[in-house]
Image (cartoon, rainbow, N blue to C red):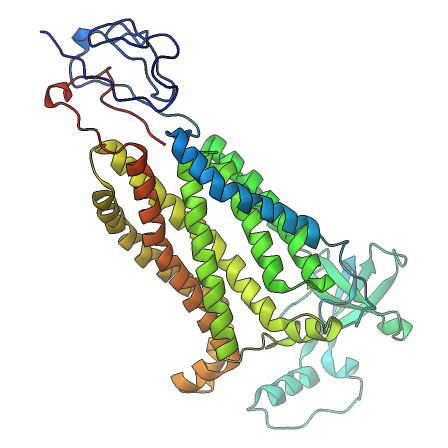
Length: 484
């Protein structure tokens, strides 16, 4: 059986005429190799495939990040992204903080000195015997307060002896009474976190604030990292490295810069852009495909920023809605709390945006590889059909994530039997609604934007040179190309 080798497509790199194998016609059989194709060409290639292989067998694998397939497109993408990357680096340099500014501790909430301690002994005692007033509380026992008071008066309490393990008072012990209705019960040998207030009387300077849970958290993080590496292999390793760098940008740049007085929105935009560039290129390689995903993510973040700024101001959201934000405002009154809210919207949307844009870009690239003659309109229509399923799942994920975070608040409104309008109008819930809807609009917009960009790039790179029909069954020639 005689097979006809498909005429070669015009290669994008290197130009025709350079390197071995240039100028060969069909049937040359010299086994030349074109960089970027991913396999040897011709029947006599070193891959070991001859005419006897048959039309049903082909090896064309792409490993690692793929390079842009056109020098012209590479220049266009670089002309857009290099100035953007330079601007991000300049922003990091200009806004980089000198560290978290110091302040005098308020002793409230998280702003307290803490030490590690261990519960050395727990004894059961009569609650009445440790009641400070010595009187039996009175009141309606049908209420939560009355029931708690009754249990404290007649129930069995625990008297815990706690040893301080760190700090200048290491080895010092103190006692704490645990009421029977208290949520957190102490047990002998348990490691705890204690708050220290130097201005209080000596026997009241220490109090238990939390349990020590570093080991189970570290173990869970180790299991997560192991699962990512086992399933993702090298991609998983790079994803973990990118995650660590993202966390460093957040803790070393974004948070200290905001506390230092920089505009939260500008800091969030610069920090999120740095995270986006590092994470996408580190996980998916320095390629045209990744660059298109970066552009789609960037345009979507701009839309989220504009919408968030408009509606946060329109809805008169202050960003100061609970004890934590109130404490931040009290310690650092110069921080723009509404800007901090918008910064949170941008950073919170970034992670899901990365997923959407990378998926859509990869889908368009694979569609073009499956049918190289498809124009950009056909690629866009096929890609957007994939994107519609992605939109439905991602938006539902985002809404449920915010609803889950606000579940205790929603339960309070349910207990109060408040109407839907009343609940939505409260600033606590309105913040979450604006956060969810603005982020979701950005996610929805990222699908057509990224799909259109990817379709334009791959179709402009090779304008769809039709392949001869006779060459379709041939394997080992140039009919199947990896373009990234």
